[in-house]
Image (cartoon, rainbow, N blue to C red):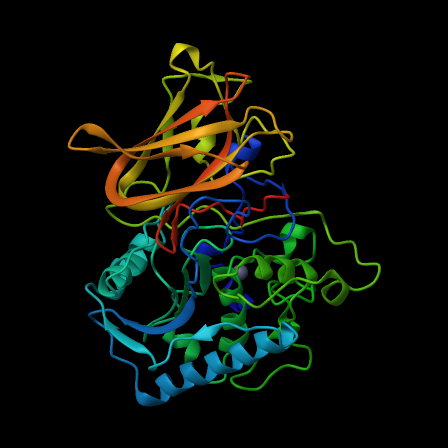
Length: 445
Ligand SMILES: [Zn+2]
């Protein structure tokens, strides 16, 4: 829904794709998935903290040093547009849920640099997002803990940059905050701001464009298309505004951080005879922030690997169900040997605080179970044990005293096969999940 007259698409606008770890190339990937919850189920000795987080929309005027702040009319227009979009989502979600707007009006943020600075860097081939980085700093948060979709209107008296874009900060669905960028130029007057806002919010919630499912971008019913019939004029809706297609509804229901009350119901959400694809596509890659290393967890093992897998599969961002096997997303250890344990050393790109993890083990319904786990953290060069206990389920968790480090070691005691299969490990700091999967994990697949 970017105005076609500009002939441009937001740089953040490319439909994202599943990572190379799934399909071997960085283009398209498909993923089978059933509806799911964020937290694993199963018996536990220590209940983990509840994941009671909500993501709100935070309207922000981003004012480069050479630009004027918004006038009061512009501010009230932005809030009015946001309310309209919120009500529109509520209608399209059939009154089950809608997104929340942070109370208190729009933030007027005085930026550190002039317009050209941001423009030059963000139009680069591998842009680092200085706007997001500045705002996370200003809000005293980071990409893991940001509880907002940063709805950024860049003050720009010159032209319509940025043309409009939206993306989840950490890629995928249900991975935390998001980012939308629009220009003050577009907000002025009888523009298509409203339809663009609805579309870019969809991206920030994790929705890709309609064409990834084979629909025509010019004619599809979804607000995630570029169908010009959907364009608003100022506050006036078109005759046929964009809707949320079944593919969109299914994806939004997986974003429980934004839509906790939305449950996808095929009876209600899929028309009779509609061929809903079994797979879906998530936005990727994550936003890159200046001065920060890649948002990527690595892992190594002194115990080796088998079945064509690598240790890093244990910490990739795709966790498959226990009744499957995938050598691109699971780690099958080498033999435990005399110690009776296998170990996995995990490196975060920066120091992180953890106080619990969930562990997804076994494949194909019972192969290579983990009987016990030990958690160690590297502090001042030495590994210190924080917890150790038996596991009772293929989806289980371990809590331990909070510690902060980039390097952690997890040891697993296998059953009679002498090996373990780790389908994935999820890392938590209280109710915040760090480096979450690109789509919510479902024990049942
Ligand atoms: Zn788009």
